[in-house]
Image (cartoon, rainbow, N blue to C red):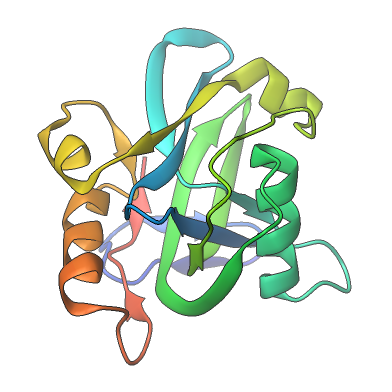
Length: 175
């Protein structure tokens, strides 16, 4: 397999195939964002928060994947999706393997705030402890780990200025 350098991360290599991922920055009518709480299955004490989303399946567009993943992970199906907000490349160890991802973040709006996690995969059942709606202020004040790492700042900008005219490319993250 070919290795390639991630933009913005000098001296680090991304080796192997990159997984195409669609994520949703889901906002309710009060502009709260929905995040999932997860952990490394072999290290339950190390936790973080992240946006709903996951891998694009064969024959699926990123938007279709975003809708499917949102429904599977949260039970929320009543959503207005779009536009594309941000793009990010990341590489991290999880569940005994290295994940190299090309992530696209879509804005989602919903009035449906009740969540249901019955659609979680086996891996998600082993590594996701719950979901929570966060205000921008709560996210900014939190000391917990959140991905992408600048999500509080990105959310504040989104709520103040609206979606970018072209998707912003976030700094690559390698863990």
